[in-house]
Length: 106
Image (cartoon, rainbow, N blue to C red):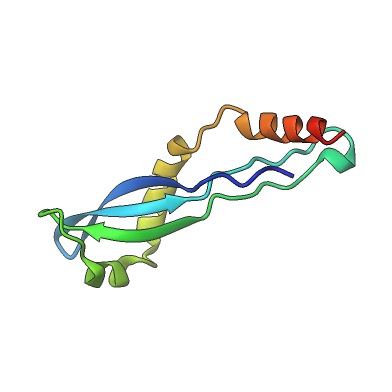
């Protein structure tokens, strides 16, 4: 099974109530599904969850009041997903780690 990797921080610029905020997010890296080979070596995709952890205003001050209002906003998550697809491009590193760990256990 793939190893757990640290969550990746990234920011999203998001407009809310006429002002622009920098929304701080964390994303669990995506481990792509492995669907070829013997069944015991296959596994489903995992990860990709995004958590909104903070909001900064134009003066770079934390805004917990705005965080509470936007943390479940669908448009924010759509924008975060667009950005996160570039953040988590591991070029097959997850598969490499899985294979390395499997080989070490043989």
